[in-house]
Amino acid sequence: MNIHNRTREKAQKLLDRGALWFDTPAAVTEHSDIVVTMIGFPKDVEEVYFGREGVMSKTKEGMILIDMTTTLPRLAQQIFREAGKRGATFVDAPVSGGEVGAVEGTLSVMAGGEQQVVKEIMPLFETFGKNIVYQGPSGSGQHTKMCNQITIAGTMIGVCEALIYGYKAGLCLETVLKSISKGAAGCWTLDVLAPKIVLGDYAPGFMVNHLVKDLGIALEEAETLKLCLPGLALVKQLYISLQAMGHGKLGTQALFLAVKNIAGME
Image (tube, rainbow, N blue to C red):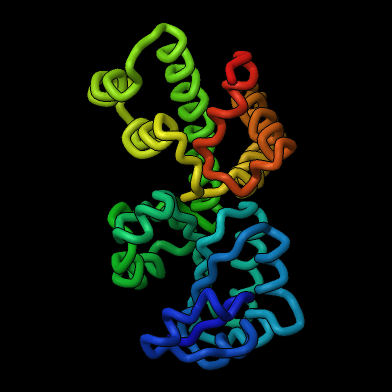
């Protein structure tokens, strides 16, 4: 395995297990047949692919490039086109499942690009994912991830408001969760994040700062599609209020703090 990371210390565990370090994305690409990237923000993806020492500078015929960052669908399509000019191909494959899914190898992978290429790299995806679905042409994986993030946003505010209501009604929240998590309201957020909220545990599996980025992309794409998504816009503003409070590096379950503040609860 050939690797590069902007912060070398974060790659040390892989290096200790025999991975080979390269100083730039270009150097990794030069020595690889398949290149997988997962970064942070769209501007970072652009730099890693199109920068002076970026992936595209060393992309060669027959290569497969895979980006697993949650980013702009149109950026995925741009990378696909540029890869094609070099005789290579590109798959956008954002994931969902958080830190738990990554550790346990159960991530959901949403793939866009050439279907035959996705079939070819399926064994790679299966090393860390359990629900791997081909969504369509280039950019489709990113559009599907936006659907995922929109759903997360609506679910999270529902869970937070339910917990606020239960608390004000004098209920035991642990007992409430035992009931509602097994009924029609049951979902990943109730199973994994709601118990953390009850315990006051806001450590990140996925940070507020990154979700704000994702929701911004979703709203931008919705505007392009001439869609009005008022629920999404509201939740994004609440998350921005968390950033203003200095909570951008907390987990997304910290939305509870913003809802609690609106409710006038200490």
